[in-house]
Image (cartoon, rainbow, N blue to C red; front, side, top):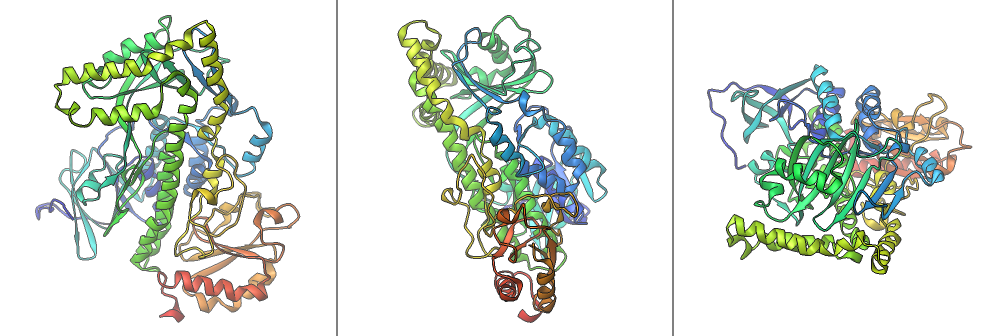
Length: 610
């Protein structure tokens, strides 16, 4: 690895896992490991939680994963979300002193909402990352198996014998050296860990973004506060995101770092907020920020004993809300595999399946997010302001001869390009026949944007392919999903076990799946027959264990699980299905045992496979 070599003067410290980065991905992984009894040291360059909102969409699957840590954690974060009736409107707007062009009402189809509620104990929710991170850091600070070193950066990484050595810098690290079995790079889009170990990211930049986080008490009346407002004006195009306590984020785009949005962000937004939103309000700017909207994936998610997760491994456009959620899923996929390897139950090659399983899923999320980004053009093409034009302009400003220009001339050119690109949007504010036609055409294409904001099919429907699930299961691809918007529960191998309430416990079946990495849970309606069959074959799977879970009476849920009243599913520690059969225990148990031995035997040294 390309790394700084730790000096002999620094004292080493042995720890199973070093997690680099205490964002949502790193914090989730450290807490999941702690619940599995695994110590970790978490390093983060920050000394206080993120205060500028980034992600704000938290889907139900993420809450289920946090529930695996502790139901109280999931409940604490879920309580931060406003009721769905308060964040149900997505609006397209020209000026704020005229009628909206159109909207999507996410609560307008109660029958769909009822279906969504049946899929999980949780709903997709709106919680700004600036509210989320203090909660996650509080849980980290209280967890005895997690040591957090704030104000600490990673200065070097190298492998030594059967360990990885992490050299730190900063006030919290004070040049200390940590020796661990594994290190996780969860340190965000500009990952130092990724750079140190020499992993590259590939994929295009779609736009350069700037944002202002501000408070305004009078922008909307209490009864009318859209979650998102897409704004198109001759001098500005972007989106306004409503947050708790009358806070908002306004995001826009720039083409060159010499433009005011990037060069003088505070001054730019002080002038822009009243110009875009109206001068009859008082705005209290909390913070500003810039970033690049990209769709990029790392060459590899693993380099020896270093694994990458979250934004360090993959970046998406914000148009889909999968950045934070996919990082939490990465942590979930990694946690049980790390425990299996650290405990000696599984070989280190088990960690190779992390990328095999996660890469197709994040590729799917990336395709969906990029498609959302460009599908917005269906609405704005009628006034000539499209994201495809924005991407071309952004790319042109990053290439020769534009890069030869002095900053002042480059900024002037970029401002002119933006002005020309947005110029036709002034028709939106007109009163003539052409203006009415443009607004009507835009409004007619707004309903087609629904998949941008409702993607339950992706949220629950992604499936893992690869060596740990039955080869007859599907890899996550677009055509593996019945519908991006609607989730139709399926039990194909690789997918998440569908949610239902167990009569015996009154809780979700997902809470009853065993968490031990060497334990598989067999779920069935015919519990006595399968327990007897499994007992006969326990030696064939040792040290793997199979626990049988009773789904209860079949009347209400037999169709949900797709195995009839006599069949069964095998489910692994993260709730994903390994094997499925409609046949009864006597006919199918040998197929179940053979499938597990074939798929898992090379990772978990089975007694009879040695």
